[in-house]
Image (cartoon, rainbow, N blue to C red):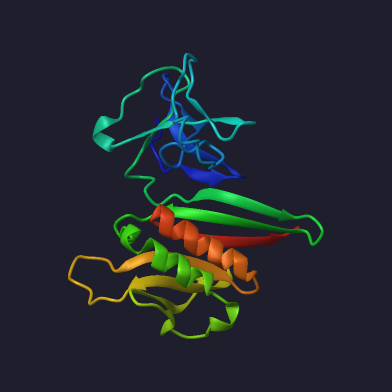
Length: 227
């Protein structure tokens, strides 16, 4: 099992472990439950498991599958078989998962959508689903501003706020949130979506990020790389 955090390494997730002879080794791991070691989400009908093999795996889509590992609470960490890599949920609760990658080969630009589960920070917004979809559909990049500002777009129950600009991956990112239009109570979150986006991305990507964040209760960021 992992003795350190499960971290990305060259596109794969790896962690440190100790073999039966007491030597430190590197092995593949899953950053979150039902995610393979590439950070790809397992299909809903194919959760991470052995399925008759001596290793854990899951189907990613109808064409591909991936190795994965079990994620357990610290007190439940146990080795259950050769090839099974168990990761502490506590260590990896902030590990981002790749939702999708868009490769613009013509312009040599790769755009990656990443989700970081945040159920404590992002509240369940299912009661405002229609309202959220309408709000997101109205997004245009002209609403972006260079300082914190509330009510960029507003509906009856929700609003989009600009929380400020942060440094992320040595780039300037906008921190945008969808908030419920109620007074916040102590210990409760009024955020139903949060995204981090760099300059210059298409509006449809911003809308996609908001939708993914709302549906997943996750902080979604977009990374853009030229090659």
